Image 1 (cartoon, rainbow, N blue to C red):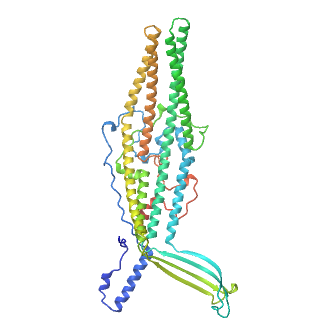
Image 2 (image 1 turned 45 degrees about the vertical axis):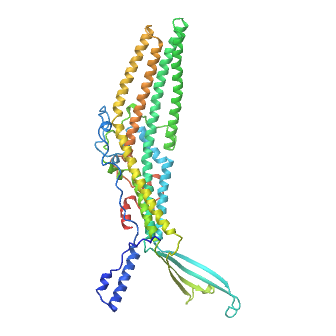
Image 3 (image 1 turned 180 degrees about the horizontal axis):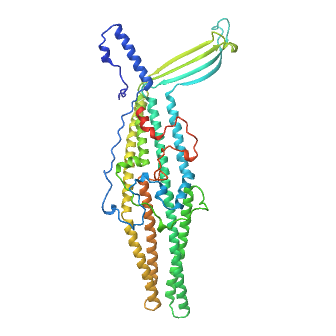
Length: 539
């Protein structure tokens, strides 16, 4: 059978005892040493948690550079981050659109998913306080009455009915010699801090979701505009072609070709109107209320100014920037602490219970002289046979830690991939958009020339039809590339840990700060996220 783990607690200094020889001096010194060790265990306890080592990051030491990852010079009109890291840039400074800033502020106040995250932080905090309270004695005021009947042949003086009244204090305390409760306390603390980081990640994600959805809605506005322009141009061409057909100077084939452009534009306009309405509905869901009627005027998609030159830094920076990575590490710390609790279950559990008060056979005699009574009942419980439960719990705790290590490493790999994807997008979209803008200009000119050749009888209407279709497709591709570029910059900002502070220069608040969300005042027992290192060291 597998042996239980050895205690990690301190042992008496036997070397010092051997220098005293034998006799009364040695006996007294041993007593004092044992008392000192017991007092130390009572005051500080010990722990059987494995020493925590942060796993090595399973990613390269630097982000990809060169090729598509090389930042290309833009138009020169972009705002600069001036070398500031993403975590130091407030979202109000990252986004220049006042309308978008207002929508993000409303979402941070109203979003229901974020509100649930805040409440989860408070619930985890309360659970931590519940677990930590087990380290202290419980004291209860107790009042009781008991009535007992004794068979007549066993009763004294034929008193078969007896009753007792008790009033006093009752206390119980499990002495945490082996650190079982301390390990559970550390586990609850790590879970609380993990929930706080999850809430932080949810807030940062909400900022990016509102921005992405707002930019998507603007892209549908632009698509609607070019579809309406295409429909107007197609309708004018159709009217002219129909007039020629009615006058006998045009063919029915040209008329039907012109009609197809009109009908396709009509259908596309309904698709984009529907998509635009659905995009607004998604934005309303994110901000938690209908779009306010007094929203500031917004910027069109082509005029959106977003910081483009945020430095990526090193992959190791993500360990302190990304709340999802910090959340995964806190889950790993919780699993590590749970191993300590599972190890401590192999050792004796020592509990002290007692009571003190008054006892009397009559109610009016409870507080008379001589009625004081007390009990003291220390208990030691040593597990001998548990059917393998303790061993299975220890195995489970070790497996759960391995799972959390894998989750932690995966979160680092996912973060590395998101940043690398953002760098690749930043290095390619500018030149793609420049090429698409030149393509739109060329297609516009081709349409003008095709219409001129058709009206002069040089070409058939098919050339006009193809030119209109090509221009419409090129305009759609340009709008799609623009919105993808902007959303990729937003995603890169978030992937680097940005979006937590409102203004550049603000002091980042703790991840468990819920004061801005209508939460109740936190009691003094609440532990801020900034104290996790001190708490773990003390535990």
